[in-house]
Amino acid sequence: MTHASSLVSALRSVALTVPDLTLAEDFFTRTWHLQVVARTDNALYFRGAGSDHHLLALHHAPGAAQILYITLRARSLNALALAAQRTAAAGGHVLSPTAPSTEPGGGHAITLADPDGRVFRLVYDDEQLDAIDAPDMPLRLAHVVLNSSHVEDTRQFMEAALDFSMSDRTRIMAFMRCNNDHHSVALGDTDNNALNHIAFLMPDIDAVMRGGGRMQEAGFPIEWGPGRHGPGDNAFNYFIGPFDVVIEYTAEVEQIDDSYQTGQPSDWTWPPGRVDQWGISPPPSARLKEAQRAVVFAS
Image (cartoon, rainbow, N blue to C red; front, side, top):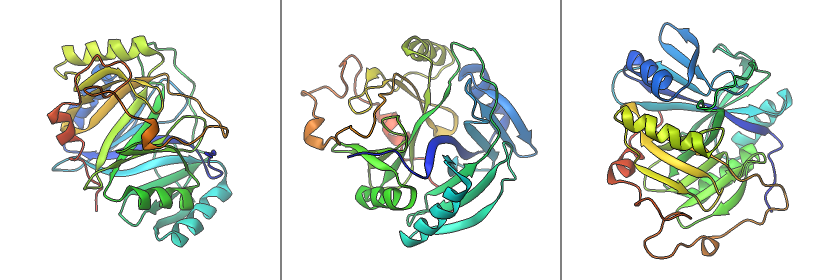
């Protein structure tokens, strides 16, 4: 049976390095429809329409884009200490102990790494913003998908260290839950440990589709979609943004509770030639599959 995490209440944000902040700011504000909420000498922080201080942090660094960390919101200050204990017991590492956060948004934070070097930051009592009424602006992050060369080990770490639970298992992915969203983190079966993609939750399916049109007009074609997934039941359009970062507009993510029965691969099979519920779109492009392996964790 799946359960909500006793330690983590939500996925908040993702931090990446990129080689060109000017290009990134233009794309993520004008085309992707986020807003810059804070800037430092070498970083930009972007908010959505919801109350999270930021959904995306981009830090300048030369070379290919890399992922720095995934920020999760903790349920309490004590949850930070518990996560540190459980991470060490599960074979991970505490990279920085609980301390006031020095990044915009504030709060208290702890930084942890799993045995493969995926970095998670847990934050508590960070700043909450007033929501914005904007029909074509992402509300918040829906989920982040991480590749894993041994999904079962990664799943067990997330369960042991962060008290996530698995809502569904398909042939190629484990969907991990911390709240009522069907998944906040998913783990993809691959031969590497890269960032697969970041999904931004839109207000409704029309916003997902209008976003697809806006991206195509800006020279970023839909690489997979429109479609509706099986696990999570969410509608989607996938794109390759600047620096080979794979991003998704999604809506209507299934809301579940502790009564949800964990699905197995045999529960999630498609007829031949079909890779989602609708069957409109061709499968993910070869270019998308390549980009889903390109952004690795900074060492």
